[in-house]
Image (cartoon, rainbow, N blue to C red; front, side):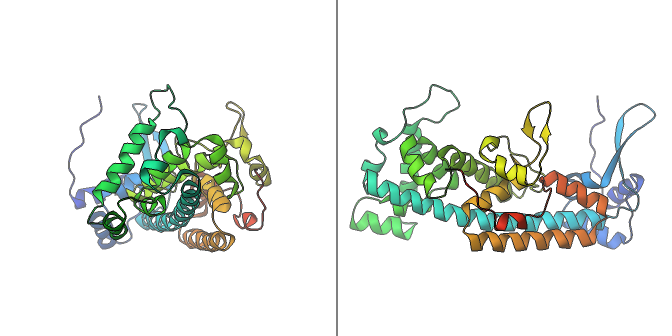
Length: 329
C-alpha cells in the first residue's frame, strides 16, 4: 500500500521539488507560483513534458525532472494552457451561436413556433432501447424546466410570457446549453439532421460527433481543467476525415487501425473549427493559436515543446487548413 499523503508547507514543497531535480532560480518566484496556483495544479498538472521516469532501488517508478528544468517552464505551459482555454471557448461560442440559429430556423419553419408544437415527440426519433440514451420526454421536460426557471429573470422569456404566452425556439435556444442543443439535434430525424448539417457542408453524423467533441472541450474549459493534452472519450469518425489525415500524413496505429492524431484531441478540435467556423473566424483562430505556440516555443526547451505538440496531436502547420476545401456531403 502506498504511503498516505501528508500536508506540506510551501517551504517543504520547495525542498521536495529540489529533491526531484527541479531547478530553483528564484525561491521568491516559486513561492508565488505555489501560493497562487497550488502544487497539485501546477506541478502535478503540467510536469509530464518535463520529466523522465526512473526506477528506484526497490523497482518503483519515480518521476524526476529533466536536466535544467525550472519551475518557470511549468508555469509557461500552465499559462499557455490558460490562454488556449480562452481561445477555445471563444471559438466554440461562435459555433454555438451559428448552430442555434440554423436549428431555430429549421424548427420554427417546420415544427411550429410554440413549444407545445415544436416539442411534440412525433417530430423526433423514437427512443432507443439502449439504457445510456436519454429519452426524448426527459429532454423535453428539461427544456420546459429551463424555460420555466427563466421567468422574471431572462428579459426575452419574460416578455414572450407576458405578451404571447408561448416561447418560440429562436428565443428559447438562447437559454439552452450547448449540451441540450447537441442532444436535441441527436434526437431529430435523420432527414431533418441532414438538412441542418448540409448548411455546414458535412454529413449529419459527423455534425453530431463534432458537437459532442465541442461540448466535451467546452466543459473541460469551463471547469478550468487541463486542456492541451485532453483526449475525449467520444471520437470523431475517422472515415469522414481521411482527406485531412492524409494531408498531414498522420500515422495509423497498427494495433487499432485508428489514426494516431485528430480524432479526440486538440487537433481534432481544430478540425471541427476549420469545418464549422467562418473562413475569417478560422483565419483569426489560426493566427492566434500559432502565436500561442510561438510564444511557448521561445520559453521552453525544444524536446519538451515537441512533447507538448504530440500531446495535442499537432503534426504540422494548421495554416495548411486555411485554404483547404473540405468535402463531406
